[in-house]
Length: 287
Ligand code: PDD
Image (tube, rainbow, N blue to C red):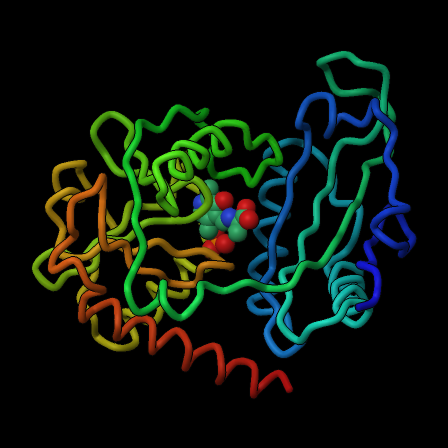
């Protein structure tokens, strides 16, 4: 297999050759933002939406976008072409660049732009058919979770709790209400109604979250975007996690207890099929 080719500050190179200065503020302060775009059959999925969210994150950390959307689009096409595999997950990040260590922003600094592509690993068939285990935890992160920041220590600590418990994700609550999981958004089904918390500063505005809500609306699956209490999650008939890499995945045990029947529910199966169909249609149109 060809060496992974990455992009760093204007150049493509093998991953092993990519270097950044140790004073890069991404390294020192976690001062940067990122995106992960799924690529199916070599076509990026919902790229416009990912680029819009990147702009939102950059604005939120007061960093100007180093590239125009057309330039991002071109680079992303190029990295897809330079890497093997039809289905990829393209990761790109912008940090505030290298400067002497001081918390305040440097007066003049060149942002660091890094991009790589990994093989896209959607959940294995068994996970789709059987669902996955999750645990719950308090959401200990900051109050700007809408920024897709590379400062992910809170998310990493949460995810490790799940891994330590033999689970796939951790469903988090703040002040008794559902926020999201460590690297995915969360939906529940109660009495046939799909529920998910509103997009605000407490969660990442997921691109997959939007797709799921659009598909629910288009297919007359009753849904409501509102605060969801911890009690409502713990007694829901279905729980799902969604993300660009997990797509839509059913949670069948929460803290060791069965969710609903302990099998992926009927609403999940419908949404999973709709999501796959939607992906195929979009990709056929792009081809
Ligand atoms: N994570 N919430 C958090 C905290 C996330 O990190 C992610 C995605 C999501 C889902 O967003 P989207 O549907 O746009 O992928 C929600 C990515 C995949 C990651 O960090 O690898």
